[in-house]
Length: 313
Image (cartoon, rainbow, N blue to C red; front, side, top):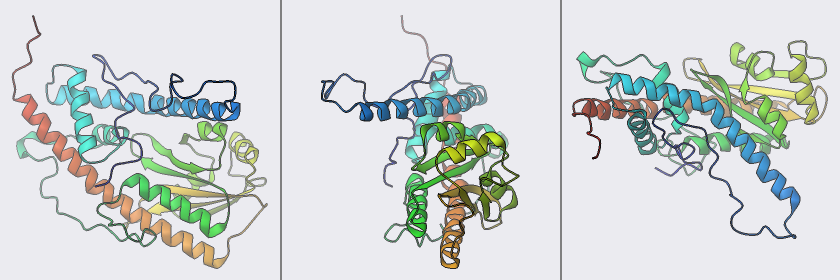
């Protein structure tokens, strides 16, 4: 299985009490340049990315801390660091982001210890096809790759430059996953999507929603102002649904023209891609994620049977 573009657990370091949010993964200013010829715009972009990353970690941090507490109690682990290491190891082994695994730990009903397995009787499921990702095996492709390709193909179909994609996380709601061409302020405002937006409406109705941003009465005024500020005048939001019709995510295209409609061919292509991605995301959640939870339960049960570590002299 290929490695994710952003490591599942590199954004966190364990702490005896909790996982403190920290900035890493970006340049620290200690190497490569720093001279008077450096482009100030590039430096500003870098600082903005770091701020956005920090905000994302602050959103995820409570989830990771809560998952640490759940695991520490469930498996009688000696400290939060042991719980973090257990979580991190399973996220890396199954190529999952730490935040996503933590969200599952706190939202999925706890295992029944008398039955051994967390999900007894679970049958294997074949992954659905991803026709918009030719040359990739759907059981091996990385989740981040699938979501980024959805946006790339959607932008290609419509010839626009702005789009965003949110995945539905049980413990959070619609959370921004990927984006193209949008401002830092926009991404910060819509890091977690609430009501009063086209994407939340599409998620709830489970149908494609078109919004004329200037006149749409379902938009909250703060959301309207933020969307207009990036030059978007029409938003088309496509829900990504499981085979059973459950919303697992939404992606939205931002068009510059007022009340700008999609052609029939564009709408068909976008709806078809949303359907494929939705079925695959549901498979991933019900297969790869549950595999990771089973592995976590197995390892945690083994740790529970060990005597507590004695402090070094």
